Image (tube, rainbow, N blue to C red; front, side, top):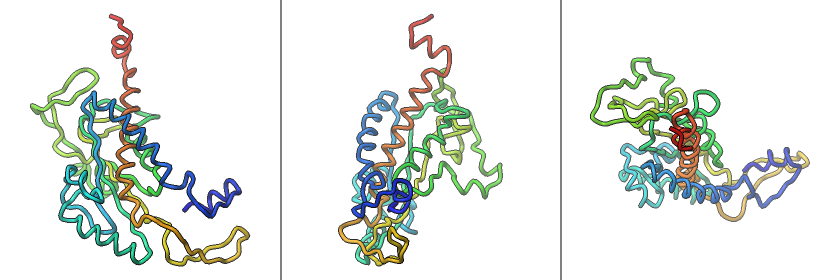
Length: 269
């Protein structure tokens, strides 16, 4: 895990591991996320996550209802079996495998997030990057956006019977695509917010690894005990919680975005 950096920072070496570098720490975040969802329910905001990839086995269909009943929170029923087999195979070999989680937030009104210090995408990325084992976060098209032309990446708008909620009411419009992942200029657009969180393979594996001891001498690290062969599976639940907390924060901050909002809160005409 983060044994070396903890030792470098604090001068402490606990061979048992755990502490803040352990995913056990995320249990309290999941509990907090459940409370955040109670607030979001009042505004019909939904946050769902599921496994979209294990190793190089990716979901080709997205079914969040199926994911809720899947043992590994798989989004694609057709890929679930192969993903489970891969996890079991690396576990039996004493190894581990990485994975990625798709989080989709729907019902978010346009206008959440700040234009500079407090961009909604930055807040979400920070919340999700703060989960143990996460090495990358993509919003919308993510890294693919760097390969596209503007005409391909732009999400064109059109008049629609569907309406987008804003601070000032509703706008009858919709987006033809969602490469922005529901966030433009750091502010929610009203389109679904889509985030992919990438988890590294669990560093605790039962294969002997070269290392050094606290004195800098060569050593071999051989683990005992238990480990999760794919932390992305549990990470799916944590990603949901962290997204809920970030959206709830943005919702509360937006209450004071305009003078009109403040007047409504404090009963002024």
